[in-house]
Length: 355
Image 1 (spheres, rainbow, N blue to C red):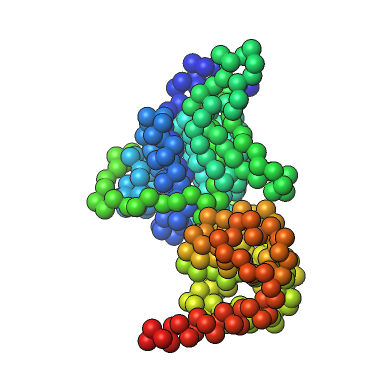
Image 2: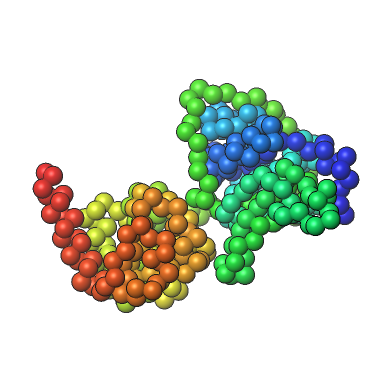
């Protein structure tokens, strides 16, 4: 059921779910605050972070430094570890109490669970896995004869659709809040303002256990020596064209020589050559390295969506018509088995010369 214009007018502010795990704010929270500041400017409104957990009030200053004007803290022992029911109750209660115009949630394992649950409880829409967020008019083009019905200052949520084969821009004009989940790595953090303070509001809706509360018996943390590719400054990424898992050795040699990390396309993960943690793309991770080598990668839109914001893209592919060359800053057409070892030699020689 659509809200009345009078009800919609009561909803103000851009809110961000500030995910924390083990009393440490997740990077996605800072990324969303950066985008929230951009969205708040044309709306002439404030940015509010919603911090949910147990004993987490001390994290409010971190959120202020990254752009939060206010921090709503929901602190309760029931919120020590993430569980759907108490967290959903907490965030839905904040939305009903404070009425945000926009609510942003990270598309993490937690956010993908929490976001849809919240949108259902507060009876609004949710656009998942957004890659672009803007404030603008909806419909994008006024309908002839109905120009006066075009709505302004709407959250325009853009995401890949139909398996990444097209891009859809979605709005939620008749309900509030306007909700979106955003993949980690897509938005950029602002430069932190050291010493910045936010107004801290403590709010607790009360928690009564019901049959939707689960009991956590044990938390087992995965141990991995794989560095997060989202933190890498240089990525040497391989696709199906590398030919075999053994052949990734030449990419690993280049990465070692240039001080980078190896990553890969979905085809490589699906073939069992590399673990999922190294996958770049729509169903993998979104990365923004200074330099991205796309080696033996054709450049399907699903992969490009995860790396097109890299500062410099260098493509190596034997197919001169490969779509990857459309987004590459530098392209080399040829056999990667000959080109990559030669490139590694040149890098090693350049490093040795500097010493």
